[in-house]
Length: 322
Image 1 (cartoon, one colour):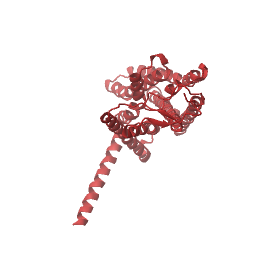
Image 2: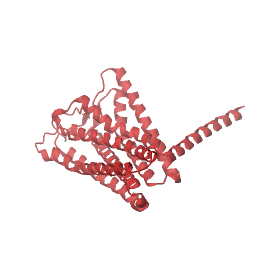
Image 3: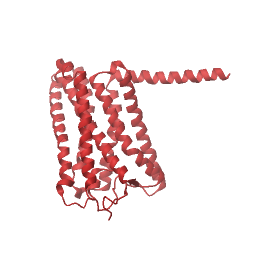
Image 4: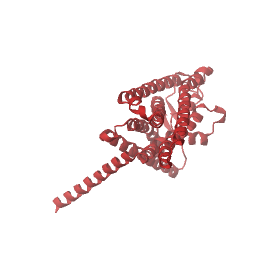
């Protein structure tokens, strides 16, 4: 078996041996990536260009859209390329780069979801202090801390993973390079290096999870004290979609990364990876835009404006040609 110094490439998961199903996977992944690019791109342009959306909630939503785009662009294009050209290979360097960027964007995504939970906690439980606790400087500091911390986290994970000697094969059994699957190839007997660092660096995410649970307990206690049914409904409708997405992201990623290797099944691993790497980045724009009336209005105006300009341009060109 080759070791890590001589290994030139890894083999990714082949979804099917039939050409028709390979093309079906290509078109399916293309549709998912286009939906994610369109949704997150619209949110980025709306929040960046409209002064009415320069609020803490929309500021963090902009950063969340950036991480969602990064997650999709890191894994899906290579899977689409392999399905289209009937190949399964990825270079050693390309795999290392994919691990780094995927870990970076997914970790930053979770950090930003935690910060957005804090935003909802302050908005509902400490509304009178909202402007003080979430001023522009505080929001900028939290965003910078999230990006910088997760950059270092991704660098630590990647360097630890690819510094291990790999001699157990090179067929990943996954459609992108994922750390748990790479660690299976390690011939190192040092448990601490193979799994200890992974658990240690994931410990902060357990703290984030506890913070999210504590925050939502306080939020729901505060919401239940709201006297009007309309007020309770508005508060629940603002918080529940966020809680669902955080729960989906956490449960699937924790199972994928921390489950024992003995219960690894190809279909289960594939389902978990799709649930935490593709579903949240695709659905986040839809969930957060539907619950944000100002964002919906801005997006509606922008889309209407684009269509109006296109129609006027076609009309003008038709008039000139006649």
